[in-house]
Length: 228
Figure 1 (spheres, rainbow, N blue to C red):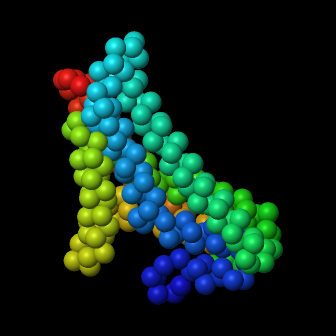
Figure 2 (cartoon, rainbow, N blue to C red):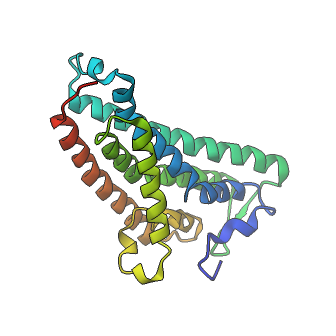
């Protein structure tokens, strides 16, 4: 809570089952969700090349740019579905094990259960949006190799490396530019009023990563010799 070591709502699970949604997202966001996204994104192009189907996909009049956009849209759809699966599963388990009702926000104010559900949905959407940078990074790595396993391993390795660097105090000047730095800022949606500063930084940073690595993936893929 006050020490800044994690979201303050973790201790509220037994008081209201809806808090299990927030806690489940906080527990899966640092590693499990990004790892799943990294695997899917890393395999998007490299997996097709490894299977020998990429050349046949490009025979259709879709074109490379359209195929790349379709792959990225597919990865983003997976981001949203995976996040919603975690949220809905946590809500069902929370409803079975703990009471439901009005929520006490991190700021100490009370909100209705319906408003709490709305904030849970908004938090799930923010968590999904927090992964667009990882998705673009994985897609770029996927265009660099024809091995799906290598692309997936590289993407997950970069994810773990960034997470480690984000915990080193000597790198505090660089950490605000790491894509994972503001991931847990979604907890600010459980304040009254909502703190938007870190949320805006997070979404802006994700858009920047998506633009940079998305452009790099497009530049690489549109000029790459397709042999498989």
